[in-house]
Amino acid sequence: MNKTRRQVCGTLCVPLKAGMPLKRTPFSIVLQQANAEMDSLPSTARRLSPTAICPADPAALDLFAELGSVFPVETEKDFDAICATTATIASYFAFVEGIASWLAQQGIPESKARDYIARLFFGLTTTTIEAPERSFQSFAANHATAGGINEQFLKLLVERGLLTSVSEALAARRFLQST
Image (cartoon, rainbow, N blue to C red; front, side, top):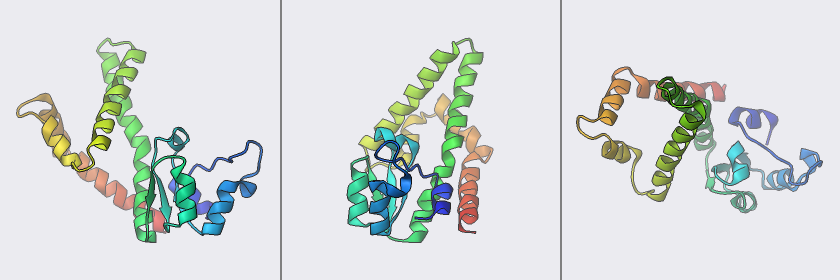
């Protein structure tokens, strides 16, 4: 695993023993022996994030299974695509900040607005994880009541090209990652 890959993918490598250099941690030793790359996120420390591993080496999979969900990936192309999606994290936080800020502008105390929005999105995320057979589109359709505020808000975002822009930005990110 090279330094460039870790930086490109936003990987967080934390020594398993405090004070031990990364090169000497069991974490990096297993990866070197396995000859696998990984893409882990800061929330992996709380066992809440997926870790992509390429190739799907059993030693690396076993190690990261202790930290949460592992996503074995067989090809470098698929691994790069998964890494590219981590580029959306800052945008997600900016999006929910925009919503919480709007609530605060409506007179809701900032801390309460932040907590409400964090829990709202946590609940939505939990729902999707608990129903892996359902597409995100099916959840969107269920929440977009005809004529309701969710349908109107989604329609406005689609009309303004937001969802298309997300796909375009991911494609650009993937291109930049491969150069």
